Length: 233
Image (cartoon, rainbow, N blue to C red; front, side, top):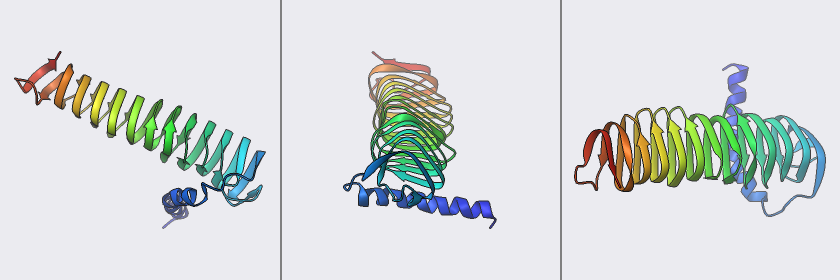
């Protein structure tokens, strides 16, 4: 195992541990604020401490940054923000936020948030609670609810309502779709209020909307399967 592989493996293990760190210390809150922080890996940083400081300025780290509120620029191999995030966050492996994000975050790995995204995430994989903005990921996106836009190469999965536009090269899935699902292979929703465009489109119910594709399936229509176009208004 070469040095790079070891670093990536260690960072991935750290990513799994981050949510538990946040849960343990979230009630304590910050002990102060600083305009500048620099770290090897929190808590080995100036000023000292893991998740103890609000940073209103610049936070630079070699491996891992862990702050409370982040208002400004945050750069490290991996980042955790326990409070609100505002500004620009860049990492190599993952970005994790416990609360709301009003920022642009970029990573080669995963963008993760327990709160709501009101800004923009760009990375390899996205996992969010709620999105009210833009999420663009290489592999895929997962969220409980989205009102906005997301795009990925392989899959988009929305647990409840999708309001806006979902674009994917592979598979789109949402419990309820308000807006537009566009997929290279397959679109799925329990309830369609809008449109589906893909090779194969499936909706259990369609109070109103339409499908465009090679095979279009609406289970509560009199004619359940149609080529090219299907819909109900």
